[in-house]
Amino acid sequence: MSNREANSVADNYKGVWDSRIGFGRKAALIVVDFMQGYTTEGSPLHAPGVVDAVANVPPLLAAAREAGIPVIHTNIRYHGPDHLDGGVWVKKAPVMKAMVAGNPYAEFCPEVAPQGDELVITKQYASAFFGTSLAPTLVALGVDTLVLVGCSTSGCIRATAVDGMQHGFRVMVVRECVGDRHPAPHEANLFDIDSKYGDVIGLEEALTHINDRRQARD
Image (cartoon, rainbow, N blue to C red):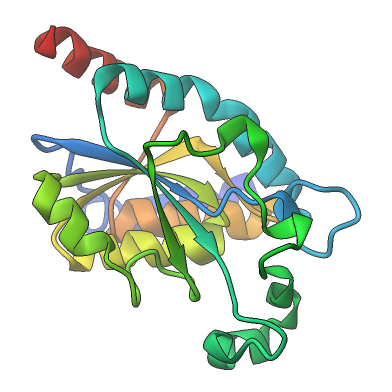
C-alpha cells in the first residue's frame, strides 16, 4: 500500500472507524502461537515478521510477570497421522499438518516459552477462543482487557481479536509484537483491527500501562 493510498484510507475512515477503547480494569497478556515453525529458516511456515515480533516480546513478558498480570499462551496441536481435528482448515492449509506432537516446528520459541506455572491453551483453529476454555478462564480471573502478541497478524491474531471483542473484552494488539509472512497483510490487518475490533498500540504504551499497574499494586 502506497503512502497516498494509506492516507486516503485513513481519511475515509476518520470519524467513523477510528475510536479508541482503551484499557479496562485488569489485563491479561495472551501470547498466540509463537512456535518454531514460524521462526525457522527453511520451514514452509517461516515468517520474517514473526522473527522480529519474537525478539520484541521478552521485555513485555518480563514486565507482565513482575506485575502479576496473567500470562496465557496458545499453541496448535493436531492428532496425527490423519489430522482429523484440523477439519477443513488443514485441507485449506495443509502446511499446518506440521503442528503435531514431536515435530520441532510445533515447539515454542525458547525466547518466549511459557514458564512452568503459566497456562497453555491448545487450539486447532485460528481463534484462541474457538473451541477452547479461554473465555471462561478470563472471566474467572476478572480480566476485561486482552494484550495480544503473537502470530500471524492476518490469521490467528486477527481471529482472536475479533472473537475477543465479541466475547466482551477490550483488545489491545501490540504492533511490534505481532508478525506475518509479508508486510502487506500485516499492515492491512493491523489497520482493520485498529478500526473495528480493538486498539493497536505501541510496545512502549503497553509497557507503561503494565508498569503503572505494578506500581499501583506495590
